[in-house]
Image 1 (cartoon, helix red, strand yellow):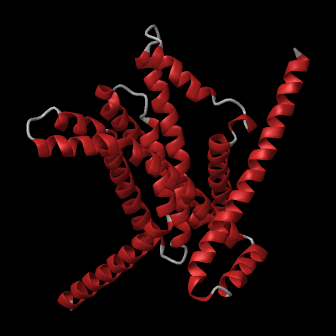
Image 2 (cartoon, rainbow, N blue to C red):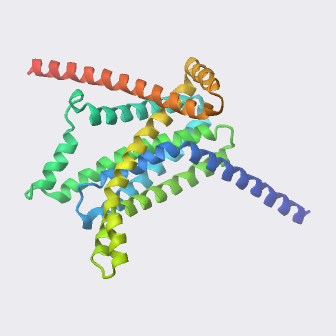
Image 3 (spheres, rainbow, N blue to C red):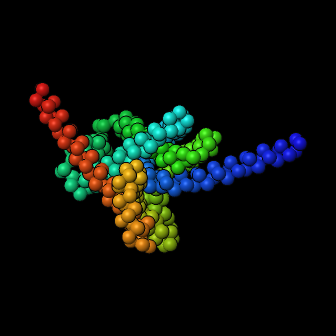
Length: 307
């Protein structure tokens, strides 16, 4: 009997682990878009930091990211146990945030005068140019800002993963979120550390002897800025696709409209669905940016009048 009970227990554990493995893969796939943006954004956060400080900054932000997830994962599990409908609301909020951030990036890129001046970017440029500025203190502020951004993106990733495991047991959900949180943090910041050092590796190889080594070094050195640009573009597109998809699935008439139109395209149905999700995401994001810009201008006028 004891042997049979042990075998049953092992079989149950095996089934749970199989289920957790499958759900982790599904959750990772659904969060892929946000992960792309997370990777691009975190790599971008390190730009402007001196070469010898890049890895310490990445490590400091990674530690902050682990702390963020230590807060977010138990909070997400608690919400799913106490009031599951709140997950849908949080997903919608996350979708709105993603399309807003994406639209703001696009508008800043193509119509920079349509939005208020980016004070943070200007401050970063001046700090690097001014030798009197305490770069250590400025670096700490940059790390704090990166950790705040990571908190928002981590929350979005965890909420999406939570939505993907809605039918799972509490144990399975806890395992999936924990595995995903650790894997994402290690993977993202490991890749960020590699990306920010590509140009340094290339430069080092260019200084070595040997034509082949120098040629590879030149390729790596030239590829670093192009890779950063690609990640930035891919991350922005992902924000519209993921955020738009979340919003479309949460609004019935949009979901059925997209489904009907995509069905007419036959073999291109999946591509059309993704395209429509992205377009809708951009439109909604642009509307939010416009509304917040108008509100900001009105508030600034009121403050100026008061003074």
